[in-house]
Image (cartoon, rainbow, N blue to C red):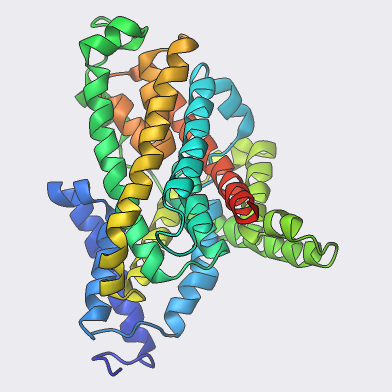
Length: 394
């Protein structure tokens, strides 16, 4: 099918992609409706509009470059703060609460896979993707979706459902944080009036502009590309050592190995890695480009057909996470704030956990929330792949 911009117009295609992503980021940071929608969804929808209106092709060389090179490099960039020592020391009681919420995600994935079996193709793989996403975040969504080569007609509506349900649950979490019934039945030391910090001052302190030098960018890109190169070589080497499908799915998965290699590096050399500024921003930017390309490859009508059932799938997972976390957390007498923040961290990752702690004035939980979210990035991909492989064998 002919399009206004042909697949051979490489520079025009790259120009549209990077300008489109810049527009999505600007909208997300300057428009309230866009902030509620989420940058990844804006990028995805923008890509779908451009390709389905026959302005851009649904497939071409630049899209393959994003898939094969940019998306893998984004993963280590987003894990530069995954120092295990700091995570274990700094999360405190939230470490237990976060794992309770992670178990809730896993139980929700099994329940959703059972309830929706046969409702859409590749249920096991979708459950794995959402386990990664609802344990860590977008970085895990990308890693697992690429590991199983899910097509755009499935990935696009899944991302829309993921973000929509996540936003709805976040609203519920804020309501529960101030609910009298919840405060009567759960300890809530961080919500006491004398402990709460002014949220506006806390936000200004946390979201300040970062200093990024040319050397920071060079280090970040160099380290990330080096990690991916090592992980790919390890993947090829492991494939020659075993024929076990289970071992190959887990240990010969380049995205799992990228995660492991990055975590080893950040744990062994924490100070050197923490001095590299801008890695997270670069990683997030590359993910936005990846989501834009997913949108470009999607058939809008197939996306619309798949959205309702995937909404239900994600809703079952998120609600199971919330109910299980609050129920077991009550038995373990964990604090309400840590339980709610853990649900937030599993569903949305480190940035959303920090945003919730800041907006509610829980100053002592900002850092634990960030560290718990980073830990979710570390374990999300292995957990998601393990769950998908388990379901494929049932």
